[in-house]
Length: 261
Image (cartoon, rainbow, N blue to C red; front, side):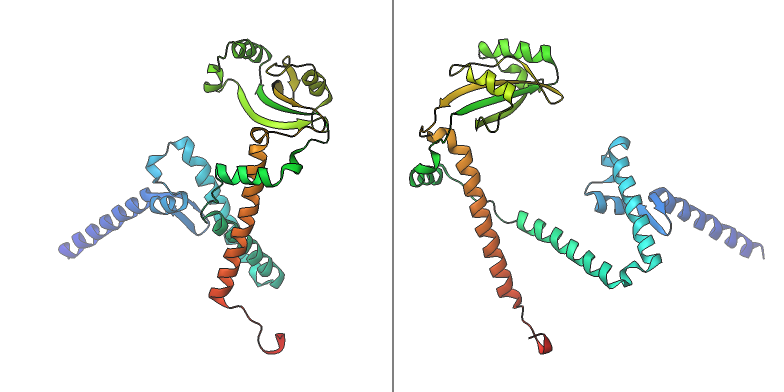
């Protein structure tokens, strides 16, 4: 009897230890769902202990929200509704389609392709009105952007590297696209000149004029290089999508059968 009692006590202690180990491995629970460290690594794509508490908390919160909704869907039998089930499949199909397309090889837009497109479509790049090749800079602070303007006159762009000032890029624009105040400031500039620091959005903006193209002027390749790149990228992406759809139809052979013909 004593031996049997000792055995039972030992078994209880072992079970308690196992339970503590299992509980210690858990990260979160909601309803009947639990999230272990291994589950977290699968869910987040990184080990639980590799993240700080601050970094992993949003991921755990997102899991809790999804697990709660999933259980409510199951409890209410929502997927038994034909319309809901169909819409769910359509949403998933759109999402998966976007992911599959994004994983296809990127179209390669070479300098020679851009130059060929420019030469073939010269007439497209003749300006119907005065146009401006400008470069933009933005900052939350008026004083910081003014100091950057003075530094830029000395060709000092160190504040860009420190992220104090945001470079908005270089683009071609005209009177239809520029804010009236900015347009007035740009019109007064010589090539290479800069506008005063002006309010823009929730901060301030500075524009530098690289080149003026009067009405009827032929734009240079440099001025339209980015525009052509975007056009070619759009065209090649569309062709890539069409090829992918054709190949997929060839693999799966969709066809109507029976009374659906």
